[in-house]
Image (cartoon, rainbow, N blue to C red; front, side):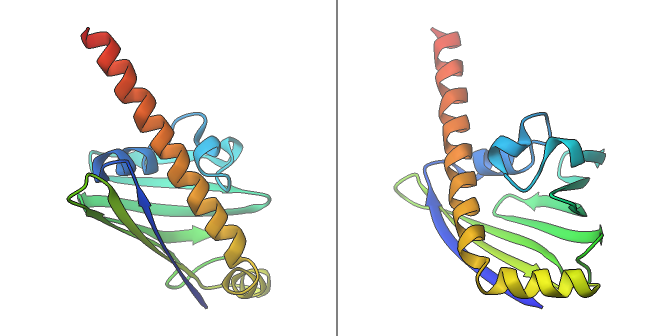
Length: 158
């Protein structure tokens, strides 16, 4: 089992970040490179929870998203072709006085078969750099999306 931790900051508010994290519409792969549109299937989406299958490159997982706490988002793996056990993601969002948001993410990868155990080991060591870059890219994509939406709302109001 691998436990991977990242910390970052964003100009997005916690609400904007959660909106980006939980937008399961077309183009999700532009924000999350490991979530190819061809794999995306929303089984259920409510106001504060969603049951979604996503993945890429032959690896998929079904995740239960819970964002009922506005400063905490939990993604629990409920099925996967490679991951199981305690696998999932936890995002903790802290609003800063300067208007930015701190993001802490913990990724747990527990392989449920040989391929999953190997992948878990790789992600916890040499793959951590790639995951870190993907995290940074996702944060930047959500910031850009939030800024564009705010600019559109501002233009519509004038």
